[in-house]
Image (cartoon, rainbow, N blue to C red):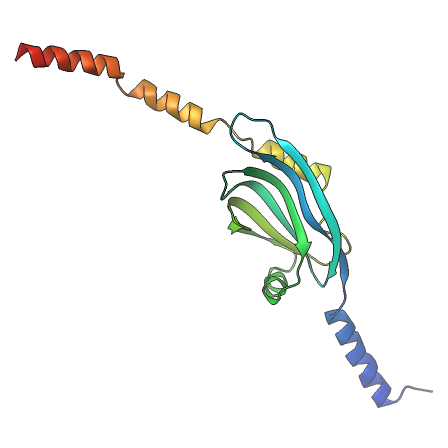
Length: 168
């Protein structure tokens, strides 16, 4: 006893439709650390909630600075609710895309999409890898010292110019 062609078509259509509209549980929020300025201590943050969508998004923030000068490292996660997010996720298919701007920040990011429950979780191993690969140095201070040692000091320049001025 076989199934009628109508039922077979319906089951095929249902399977296709169910695959397109399957929903996954995802995390939404930020886990990582922020630093107000060079030399200050990092503030660790863990602000996440749950959401559900056809794709989960995990943005790895290797190192970034926002518009207010706050330095950030960590993982930003969210659900792919918008058509643009879903379109990007359908193109990347399990790979991460390197981007230079994200959510008002500029820096070094990896935009990743996945399709399984809580696949965009921020693990301790992920965070440790981000933190060790992207150590923030006191760039402003080291650049100043390096440039200062290459240029003549103001007092030396002033003395030489004064001597030359009075000799004329």
